[in-house]
Structures are given as C-alpha cells and as structure tokens.
Length: 193
Image 1 (spheres, rainbow, N blue to C red):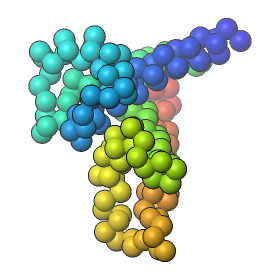
Image 2 (cartoon, rainbow, N blue to C red):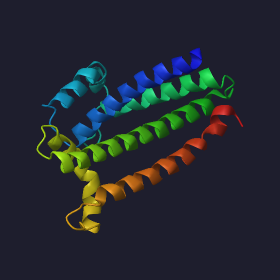
Image 3 (cartoon, rainbow, N blue to C red):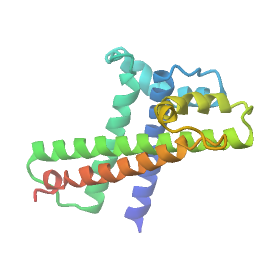
C-alpha cells in the first residue's frame, strides 16, 4: 500500500512538472503569447528549471530544448523509480539498463505529448461549441490549429461541422497503441531477458 502511495505521489508530481515543461515547449514552438493566466502559470512553474539550462542548451531549429530535455529527464526518472519500487530485479548490465530506461522515458514523454495534444484539441473543440469568445479560447485555438490544419485540408466540414478533431483523436489513439508496443520492446534491455 505504501509503495502504491509513493508511486502515485511521484507520478503526480513528476507528471505535473513534465506537463508544464511540455506546455512551455509547445507554447514557444507555436509562438503563443504567455501573457495570459495559463502562460504565466507555466512560466512560474518552470522558470527555476528552464532559465539555468538555457545557458548550456541552445535552441535547436527554433525548438526550446531547455524545456524539452528536462521533461525527458523527469519521465526517465519516473520510469526508473517505478521499476525499482515495483520490480526490484533489473538488468545487471548497466549500459543496457540505461538504454532501456532512457528509451522507455522517451516513449513515456511522447505519450504525454500525445495526451496533451488530445487535451488541447478537446478543450479547443469545446470552446468552439460553447463559447468561442472566451478569454482562453484563442490560446487553445492557436495551439490546436497546427495539428488540425493538415486534416482540414483533406476533410471538408459536413453541414458546417468540423470533423478534423475526431479524426485527429483517432490518429492519436493509434499512435498511443504504437508507442505502447514500442515501450514493450525495451523490456529485454531493462530486465535482461
């Protein structure tokens, strides 16, 4: 019971930090203004980590690596902590174990990104149906548009209803299934099978 409680607390805290770092990454990638409540919250929760890293980690192709890399590190630490607490017996080959944990951490980060995009698309769709003039609506519209734009070129609206969010959610669910399969491929490296 205590191990489950500890894992739940670790996953909540680490997942929250990773989510905020990913939100900062996505907002900077899409050049979305941080001059709103959500943007200020994201900056306040991640500045302690991102600002010092910017001295050592430059951006890459316009992507903020100082936000993305710590999210990967946090997910990797969560994977390792979960494995140690749950499994106990891990691979004795340190290099294989590190490769497996880093790979699984990357898979977990990609899954978190997909869940975040799903949340953004759902919130954007709800705003478009309920209150498209809400103060936070432009933020979610601008974050979801790059993911929906390619689908909107292919899928026309039917009776003024945009079906691209539904198709995107289906594609993202398929990607989650693929990532789950890829994550399972790291088991031999981690457990020495």
